[in-house]
Image 1 (cartoon, one colour):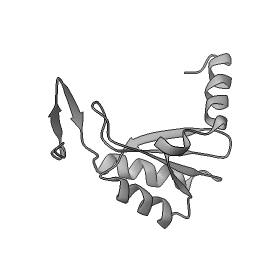
Image 2 (cartoon, rainbow, N blue to C red):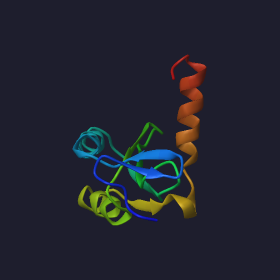
Image 3 (tube, rainbow, N blue to C red):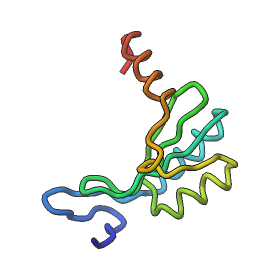
Length: 108
């Protein structure tokens, strides 16, 4: 499968937006504002490019597209954040617990 262009790529009947500078900036700001963060690198799928899921100690999380799997692991290493292959380890329970708490509190 070919890599998407810098803006979008056609993958079957869907369009995949590639990572951009805003995604990278968001990740830098997010990881700098939280503690106990772990990174979960998610592989490319038919509808999404490679993504990096960051999960804080309390389960708060963010997910953004990244240029590559290698880039995601290097990003985590440079921020002293452990990184894992999400396809192997899954996502942490604390993230599901966080989502459940938010839902019960009426948050999205």
